[in-house]
Image 1: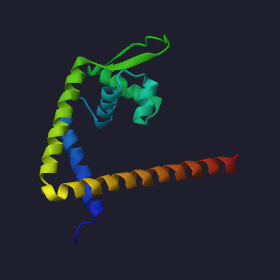
Image 2: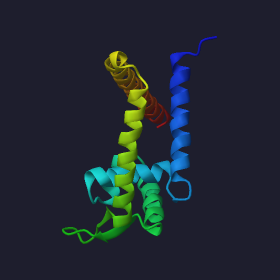
Image 3: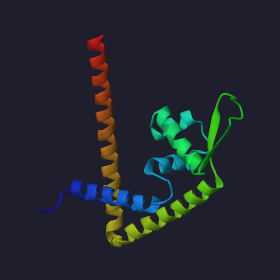
Image 4: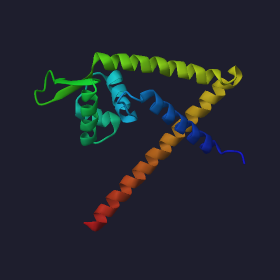
Length: 159
């Protein structure tokens, strides 16, 4: 039986997870922690509230992530320059070096993957993958909207 396209995509997702786990082994980093580091890399020093929104997690969850990254020496908390009640989370030099290395590895893996596709097929593959990602993002957004509406309707009917 020929695998479905979805089966191949799930296989690729699983392989990426395994590769990330291998890359993070012994570093104290997890996928969630690296995601937070990427947000800081691209958005600069941020409040924990802003990071929670960027990472789409709860403030409580972001506190645990920042605590772990602070303990491992990847981030530091500093006073906010204009709001004395807030603190900023910023990358340490160690984290900047780690992120630069990850970015280089990202570029190299991309080049390796693209090179595995024949030159005449590359544009079609890129268009197809982009179309799949866009459509899946729309499906997920619609499902989240439907779930939120159902929760709201249940709350109103129970009130």
